[in-house]
Length: 356
View 1: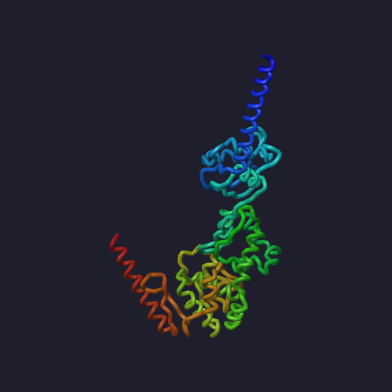
View 2: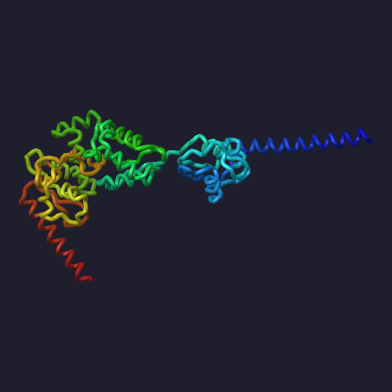
C-alpha cells in the first residue's frame, strides 16, 4: 500500500513536471517560430516612448494574435518586467514594419536593436522657398522644420558639399529617396549630393560647356525654365529662348526671377515689380541671376542641356489656355501672338461675367 502511494505521487509529480515542461517548450517554440500578428502594420516609436506605449499601439491596432507570447518575448529581451513595467532596455526610436509572418521574439528584438524599415522621402512639386523645402522634409522624417532650416542656412555644412545657402536649391533634385525616419540632415544632404553628381556625367558637363555654361549656371537657368511653366514638353523650347537671349546679349526678362525677389507672394507681375532692385531681377540685370531660384528638377536641367526652338527669342501664353505657349523669333511676330492671347483672355473674362 505504501509503495503504491509513493508510486502514485511520483507519477503525479512526473505528469505535472512533464505538463509544465511541455507548456514551457510549446511557449518557447511559439514565441520563436510561430507568426503572432494578424496583418502588416507600420508603427512609429518616438523619443521618450516606453515599451508600454508600444504595447498600447499594438493593442489598439488589434495586431497581436497571442498577447501573452509578445509579453514573454519583451521580458526575454529585457524590455519588460512583469506585465507592465519597463525593463532595463528600451525600444529604439524609429519607424518599424510588423509583418504577419513575424514572430514575437523577432518583433521584440527589432524594437530593442532598432531594426528600422526605411521610409520614402518624397521631394516633389514646386520647391521654391526654403520654408517649403523644410516642411516637406520634416513632415516625412523625425527632425523638425527648424533643424532642416538651420541646415539649409549653415554655410560650413553646405560648403562640404560644394554649395552655399544662396545656391542650395541647386543641390536638391526632386525625386523619391529612401531614408530612415530618424536620419539626420547630413544623410539627406548626402543623398542629394549623390543624385546631383549622378546627373552631372561627363556627357552632361560637355553639353553645358557647349552652351557656354558652368554646371551651376545650367542649374540656375533650369530653375528659371521650371519657374516659367509646369508643361514639361515645352521645357526645351523655353530653355532655347533663354539661351538665345544669353547668346545675343539680351536681358532674360524672366518673370519667375521677379517673383523670386518678392518671395513668390505676387499674384500677378506688373511693370512696377520689374523695376525692383535685386541681382536676381533679370529685367534690370544682364545675364543669369546669382543662384537658382527654385529646385529645377531633371526635366528642366535636361532641357537646358538639350534645347530646341531654333532662333526663337520670345514666347507668350497660348490663347488656348492649356498651359502651353506660342514662340516667336521676331518681336513683331511675338506682338501678334500676344495680341491673340489678349483677345482670347478678354473674351473669356466677358463670357465669365455674362454667366454670373
